[in-house]
Image (cartoon, rainbow, N blue to C red; front, top):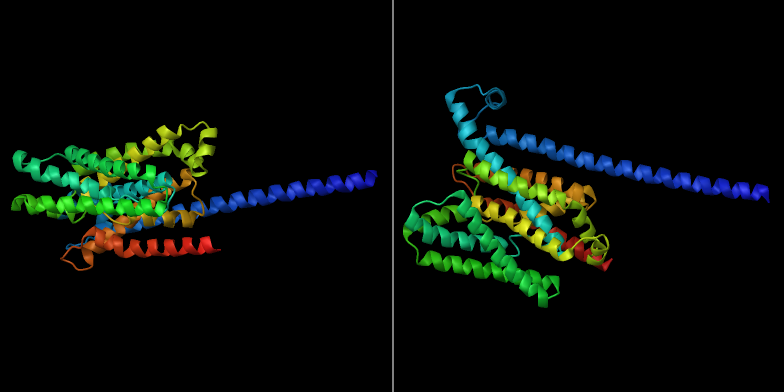
Length: 365
């Protein structure tokens, strides 16, 4: 009997040891995957930044770029091109791209659907509609409009569209039907915008047309400071909500058991998402598919939906994606510049199609 008990104890100890070894091996593997993804994103960010600064009507070598950026030395033309034209545009593409990706992640968490995004749900169209109203009615009388006014107008439009979606969600529980409702809201907002354009003055239409095309061109350091400041605050607040977001992903009941006030949490989630998407729309116009494609790719690459990891990765991934798309928009048919949404749709739409097919196969399996 003592020998049998000894063997049983040894077996139990070996099982526990194997379990601990397997657990630590899995943790190490996961950390290595996270590290690899972040390193790839960081290298891609630096690479795309350098290529963006280097590429244009005037080619600037890497050595001259490094001198101008880090030492503030170079010819007058180099300094003006890099610091007044290219750097503000590149930084805004990165900041707004990250914000759009993070906004999509929050909406997907809120609606518990990976296809939810600010463009698909009509939130960007709502922001565009109110900004169009302000640009046509206010600018015609005042003559100019500040960045803050544009952001507030876009935020109001985002909340208006989101409010309609939330009202529909009370009666429509099917997520597919809810997404269709969001698309219809987007069409309504676009129709109202087109109606305003029809009866607007030519000068107002020109301003609205240039903005509504969706572009990172014409960005200034003032835009970087204002837009970057607002988005930085929103990103910090989102990161502070990482734990409640993780609990909410496991279900409302679990979140409540963990002490999360689900009602207040939902309000905070939708407000932060609206602020992020509204800031993007105010400065760069409506941009499609980034908020859906990038979070999906990031979660697939990380093999997790943990907010602590996904939030910074999604922001960095969105930055890289929009910077690369902006580069293509500038150089593909230079000197003609493409709309940024044209490029993001070309690369983002196939990802969404793949996601739909992948989800359908998962359900059948």
